[in-house]
Amino acid sequence: MKTSVLELGNLIQGFKLSCQTEGKSPKTIEWYISFLLRFLKFLEQNELPTQLDGIEKTHIRRFILHLQQEARTPRTNKPLSGATVQGYTRALKAFFAWTEREEYVPTNLMAKIPVPKAEAKVITAFSEAQIQSLFSLCLSSNSNSTRNTVILLLLFDCGLRVSELVGVELDDINQEEGIIKVRKAKGSKERYVPVGNVAQRFLWKYINISRPKPITPHITSLLLNERGLPLSVNGVQQILRRYSKKAGIIGTQYVLRRHEH
Image 1 (spheres, rainbow, N blue to C red):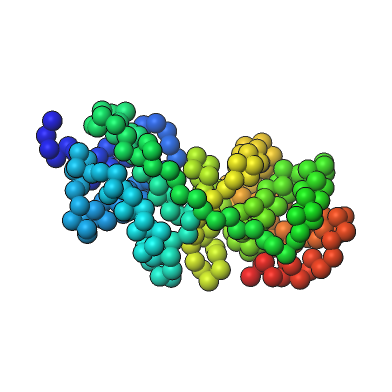
Image 2: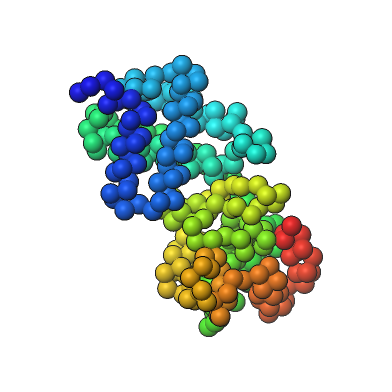
């Protein structure tokens, strides 16, 4: 086997081709390759091996630590979120599992390196009892229960703001990795948000079964109303106010304003 075959840059392109032939979504492939190229750049900048047979677990752990403590987002120069670090780690796991399957290496270097935990963002303006009451009412309703449950889960479990939630499009959701890309975040920032198992199940059900047909093919927003039009900030607020009123929760107006911006 030629030495150049084991160069990380060449293998990343081979991995990309493999993902394409396996039918992975273009968005998933894009995330994988961009994350892997950053890993390659880290190795080069730190004068570490870029040959697959020279890469060690220590090098991978150094990269993950770099992401957690030193790396910054290009536009805002702020630390990477826990969800973004998880995305990088999952990309590495997928890549190194592929190198073992393809028999480029005898063992998977990432097999025993865990995905780092990410802090869950929870809206604390509601009590746990109030949140449970909202979910119970939502699940027991006959109209749009799946969509409205998705709304509650993404707000309370994932910590999205209402203004961010209505900006989520279908291509922003990576169901394979359990991550949502928030493009219209506060201050025009971009971030990745982890999605819990329950939210993933309801998202799948909504997208594949319950989501109305868009009024035009160009509409790609996740959340639609009965007419197939994207839900607005005001539309989501009205849904939350309706359920809050049924649950007897007061002060909802303030809470919604607080988490809209």
